[in-house]
Image (cartoon, rainbow, N blue to C red; front, top):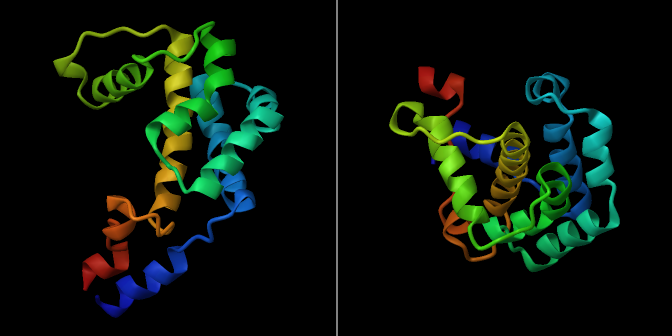
Length: 159
């Protein structure tokens, strides 16, 4: 491993703890630019992230080192219930997958999502992205933990 990549790897390593993940998720969710883009308030986000249910599920994620899409969906359950008046169903992960594909490849899909469901999907994806970053450093024997993708920095690309 080139020295720059190794240094970045060590710098990027995150200590797996409830407080670190909680802070990183809140940082992602409370970005004022992003909140404005999805037309959602900081108070609404804090209402969910300060909830005991949310914190207990997040503690479970840390303790079990389970970063699966399903546990993330469980973490977002109250948001889905309140925003969309929906409950978690067996199709919920498929719907998120379809939304993500539609977002990436608009020309290949004609799916339309309600604005509330879009907001939920965006919140879910932000939280899941943070969880996936922590999984890289969790030593939980998952593929992502064993073979994490660490991309070159801008400086490393130049050399």
